[in-house]
Image (cartoon, rainbow, N blue to C red; front, side, top):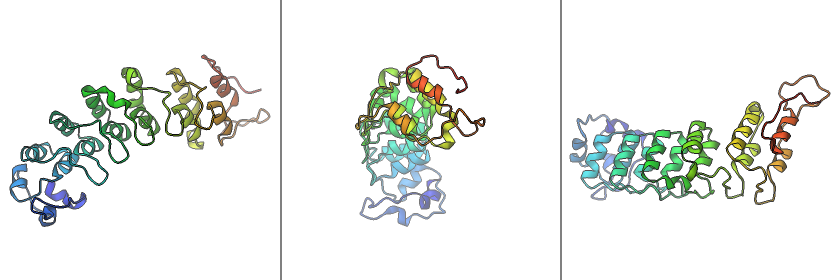
Length: 267
């Protein structure tokens, strides 16, 4: 129950009488129900966030019924809904939404619950949020990143595919971040040796979904400029070994706008 987890969660500050009720809560106490927890003097302030983080719907319902503030914020201005989403507690998120939780307001970095669902890979939670208001997919955080951008950069490609296939009206694959960088440009900027084997496939995927190579960042660099500057080793035509090297021709064909790129050996 919640009592056994209190040492592992952040303590709330200030109880109903100005005391931190958590400090007087025995960590080994067994609570038979959420009602017991409330009746034994725990503060209502912020407790709903902890209950929702742990997925304890019963306790969350009782706390809300007894006056817990569903929009109370932690030191990073995250609400109970954000905590529920971060931990993949879809059932608790549904409760909070039904109680009127505002999920279009961001935290201290303007990350909304939709950003957290995308970042942590919780597709069902993201679907829940969009079923209430799909405009949450257009929200930007302080770095001008949308849930689509975050899902892609975090490698949650199932979410990316769903967003591009099912929610294309609300997402923009060419949207820029605070530095004017698009997803395609980000892919090239942050590639490394471990990701090189999948680079061409990833580029093909983004381009097939409408990524535009001609869009320049805030410094005037388009995707071709970025590709020319990435720190990877291209295969020399005079070398027989292909291990750990990129063949240049397919990449330049792809970026030049060939819709059906071929993969011949470089000559």
